[in-house]
Length: 269
Image (cartoon, rainbow, N blue to C red; front, side, top):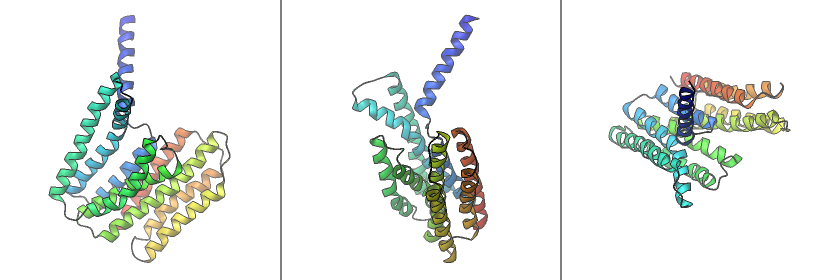
């Protein structure tokens, strides 16, 4: 019996080590990655859309093992996790490369244009990551905006015109900015710290007005305004209630992100 328990414990330990190397630890990152992928596939399904989705997911998953491997390499050390990180870097990097190659073959539009427009935001996030400042506000905003550009890349590759594709990117970016500011305030409150609700509300209003102006010019449908407003509604409700645990905040945001995607998709269908 003791031997079986020891083996089970060892198996659990190995599983935990693999997860710690292979999977991102930032729960919010999953939402910022999967939401633009899901929205793109809903409104513009195509072969290249699936391939770019695979590439985006591969890039997201490769980030952590590459960071671990490069960090160990710079420090001139080789740990058990180093080999594991190298293996997952190759696997996830291969998925990303295969997706991009496939997208270049099947694309129906110049999808590199929105990718290049997102590059400055990605560089800011990567620089912060390299200096272990990825939790700074600017880094979080830049990373989320860069990832949300995936929806524009997908839709352009599926034959959409550039302007409505950028409109989708704008909608998700506004949602991300509003959500990040709100979550940071919620987390502060959960830790017993103070959070200025006025600044959070100001960001919510700014995000909603931005999408309303885009809708007035016909760049996005009016349902997109409702989608972004969902974040503001949650902000008003949550900031006037007792603080909630960080895990609850995470699950709430995932549900909210799905709702934003579905409402936005309904406006474009």
